[in-house]
Amino acid sequence: MIRRRRATRPVRVGGLVIGGGAPVAVQSMTNTRTDDVAATVRQTRSLARAGCELVRIAVPDAAAAAALPEIRARLKLPLCADVHFDHRLALAAIRAGFDKVRINPGNIGAGARTGRARSARVCEVIRAAADAGTAIRVGVNAGSIDRRFARRPTVAAMVASMAECLAPFEALGFRALVLSAKASGVPETVAAYRELSRRWRWPLHLGLTEAGLPFEGAIRSTAALGALLAEGIGDTVRVSLTGDPVREVEAAWELLAALGLRRRGPLVYACPTCGRTGIDVARLAREVKRALAGCREPLKIAVMGCVVNGPGEARAADYGIAGGRGRGAVFARGRVLRTVPADRLVRELLRAIAAGQART
Image (tube, rainbow, N blue to C red; front, side, top):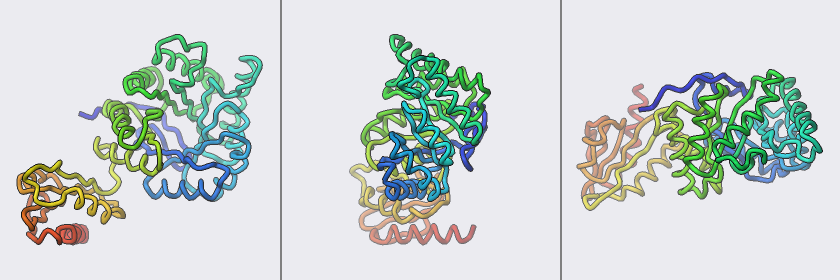
C-alpha cells in the first residue's frame, strides 16, 4: 500500500513547485564540461525531452561559473547549480539567474580561517538567494559530513550535520529550502531520510549517491527510493546512474509509474517468457516501446508470450498482444479484437491504439 504523501512546505524553483503536495518532480544532472556551453545546452535539452523537470549543472571552477549566464539564456527549464567549497561560485550562479543552488554548508566557504568566517560566507549565499528568489538545496552526503560528527554512526552523523547546516538558514528566516541526505548504502539512505522526514517539514530530494552502472544502479536506487516513496516520503527524485543521464530520467519515470504516483506516456510490460512462449517477446516489447515513444497518454500495454498470459491475465491492460504458433491476438481490456499473423502483431496493435484514442 502506498501511503499518503507527508505534508511539506512548497518551494518554487523557477516554474516548478517542489513539495506542498505538488507531484514528485524528476531531476537529473549533466555530465558535460560546464564551460562547454554547446554540449551542456544540448544535453540539457535531451534531458528535458526525456521528461526531466529540473536539471542540475556542476560549477567546479571559475570557467564553469563564467559559462552560466549563457547557459541560462539558452534554456527555459529550471536549472540548479551544484557548488562545493567556494561560496563565490554559488553567488555567481545566483547572479546568472539559476533557479536553485545546491550547497553543503559543511564544506562551502572552504579555506576560511575560522568557523565564524565560514559561517559568514554561508550567510552571504543565503542573503543573495533570498534577494534573488533562488531556492537552495542543502545536501549532506555520507561522504562529506562535517568532521566534527565523523565518529558518530553514519545516519546519526548525517542528521546532526544537517541540523548544524540549517542553523544559519533558520536564523535568517530563509524559506526556499530543499533537503537531501544521501549515502551509497540503501539501509543508511532510507534511515537518514526517515529521520529527516520526522524532524523537518522542508521538501526532500531523494537520491542514492554513487548508485552504479545502469543495471545495478537502477536496482539499488529503486530499493531505496521506492521504499521511501511508498511511505509517503520524498518530493523530488534523481536516479543516479553512471553514463548517459537520459537513462536516469527514464528510470525515474518508470519508478514513479510503478508506484502509481505519476505517469508520462505508456507503461509497457511483458511476461518473463517460458517454454510455452510462441513469439519473440523481448523484440516485440522493444518495438512497441519505440513505436510509442512520442505518445503521452497514460496507457498500459501488455506484450505476452502465449495464451496463458494473454488477455486473461493481462485484462488490466488497456491494449496488448499475445502470441501463438505463427499467429497472435490483439486485445483491449481483456477482449480479443482480432487474430493476425505474428509479423503483423505490432502493426495491428498500433492501429487498435490509434482507433481507441481517436474515439476518446
